Length: 224
Image 1 (cartoon, rainbow, N blue to C red):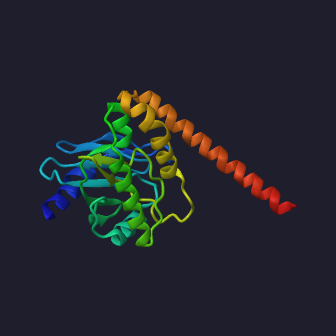
Image 2 (tube, helix red, strand yellow):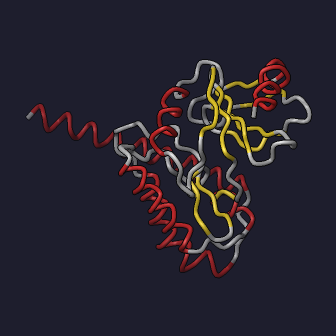
């Protein structure tokens, strides 16, 4: 671990370039020094790993983006659970985490991989466990939950201290049971990324619209 920490600070960070243009879209990574490899990008951070340490990953936050200290606290509360990663080191906007292997549900749709019901059930149980630890599962969607050997994993927990309600996981489950299982799963369709991106952006737009309409309705009710 000490060798990895040294490599992160001396070799990775000086030549790693990351930028967040829009907090609602994935960050952009402009430079990754060899032999480090980029394996994931979220809205606030990117994840890389070193081939000599295949079971560990380094998560680096983009400059100016919040959430680092909150994520450290989330991992402290989660402790050890098979569906979550663990934080082994944290400093100055970077975390070294236990690596979770698998394929995101988003990529499963692209690859035409069948998603068994056990994956959804495992994630449900993991989110219940998080709630029992005083956390509030938030922003759980197809891009940050994974499938590995038919089991479900939760990759991104950075927003689990947000107390406001979030329906993304419930909405995904509805789509899974009402649309995916009866119609898409038997066909093993491979969804192109551009189509998945359209679905993602359309869902985001509709979610904002519904939220805005609820706010307007609430404001009118208070004025009466």
